[in-house]
Length: 294
Image 1 (cartoon, rainbow, N blue to C red):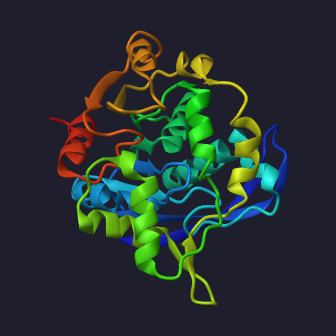
Image 2 (cartoon, rainbow, N blue to C red; image 1 turned 180 degrees about the horizontal axis):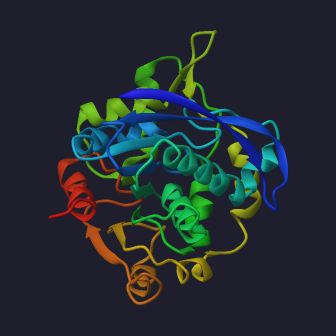
């Protein structure tokens, strides 16, 4: 595993550049391998969520696991409102895809694995067709997000909570992330360690910019998020993994996703809500079987 940084323009739409910021990523596998997999995490998570998946893929793929702006080790944006522009996340994704493509003198195949928000970014990047996405995996997200789920998430997104010790932080991670499903102690600890930020006063908090919640909360109490117009433009073969207890990707939405756009393959995982986090062997096998030639 190699950790790298890429400086990108802060593009908030209509080619309006307000600044620059860095995006951090881990890179796995042979740099000459033309089969590339880009992995992008959920709303408040970070790239280290993909360590187990990347480790399983790196013998056959070159894998990039990305920290979205304001999360993990990526740069924080000066203007809180810039987190509200979906174009910024798509522009960052396209900047990374161009960076990857420019390292090769031969044709490459790029697949995308996204958990929740990371899946939506992948969907939007795929329909841009600037760097084609060959296959897309979306974990527990779709083109319709119920407002009730947004209200639930708004209760914890971006909270600048502090803890007296690491054990308290891990307990909180287990509590708010319980919908991830049954994880081992080692997996919970992995998530907590890489979510953690230690402050100078000895307290522990989370490794993301609290400002990510500002614009989110402005929208969270209004309406469902409806992105069907974008889904209908998507052509890449798509696998959707749904937590059977999810309140974000509803059963009816998943059923419609099988009929519209790329006519996704849906796999439902019992005992899991939002979202399958792709840590256990079964979920990793599902992703590998979809991405890799049989």
